[in-house]
Image (tube, rainbow, N blue to C red; front, side):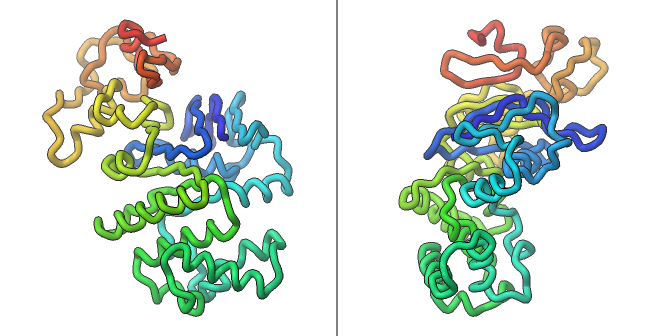
Length: 308
């Protein structure tokens, strides 16, 4: 469905994403995790072609159903964004406070020239019901809803166009735990009923473990490790281990190290913090290694453990 090859994103001298490659098949839930500044949101924007083309690195390839996103013109991008939708982290700021919900949800249908005015109204009502909100919600303004209700509205706005792939950027991070569960279960229910595929960006490992069947771990714009969600139980990359053990109740892990211990420097972005680093790390070049269980990692330690 989506094939990303050697994606790099540069903003001037700053590299936000570097040589990132992965695939997602239809029907999968891919979780993208990492600390703040790891490039997760930039990745989402690049997939939606919201990053200027001249910011994409040479050799970057983004293929959606075999079609190159970089080569798409204005009309093709318009059709792409109907099929691939982005849910923003803060639903309140993504709605115009002066526009009623009914009008806000119908806006995408108007832009794409879909349905008559009365048909658009019926479509909006149907989508509101689909996300668990009443018909009366359409006549209200964004400030009249709770945080959980606003997130339902954010989902409704992308669903109204009938997308196949939804990229959700921290969709529940601002919600209470009980409400988080409601929204995640709603998203899973919508997946089954509407045959959706998700890319979920999050920093909460518990949420990713619950929601996703595949995981991609990023650090400073690079892939550290990816594979089935069992990598959260049996991590290979030292950075994935650090994320897991930094959770409340996580097992004690070897502390992060600092520079100046006599090892050679390395191009690995995690090298300065890595508790497992050694002189082998000097050979790091961003190459991916595939382990026997199918996971992919960029750690050079994989060479001696079945990595190919």
